[in-house]
Length: 212
Image (cartoon, rainbow, N blue to C red; front, top):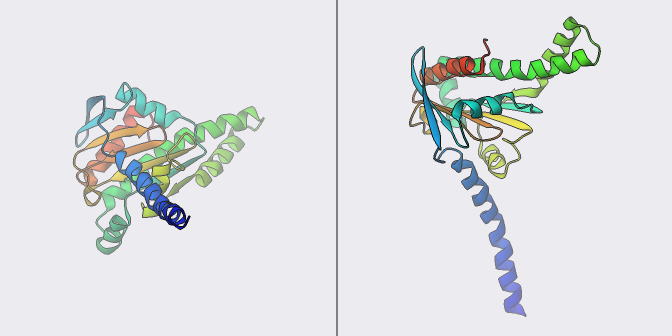
């Protein structure tokens, strides 16, 4: 009996680390999955790869962006990036990239709220005001902490209800310039420099047909 209790206790102690490892592995898999297709898109400052993990990359990108979400979380980078930006002030291109993409996804979400408000009987001016207020509450920025990585891994963020947009620059292990959606609800911009990320943000706006 005592051996059975000890074995049970040992198993119970192993479960939390195993679950956390599983969530973290699912998070890292977002950046290591192999695409099934890719296209090369030329932007104002260079060529970017748009990768697809289910079918056509451009169709996949638009399906991800135009899906209706309850919330949008923009992740400019890890805590290390925040520290670097605060310390050096050399993240202007990153901030411009974040602003550009936030504007793009905000307009998509705003158009949805505008249509709902119009259907509810509000005039155009009132509907625009309601849409702006809803988008302001629905779109937020969050630095990538360990806790949020685990949330992404277990799927409580980056799903059909919560879109997570992740920027991966040189301090976060970026190896190439690419845009991709490894699963519904997750959109990744990866750039070898912050200027490359800004170039990708401009391409993203052009591909989605939204001008900010």
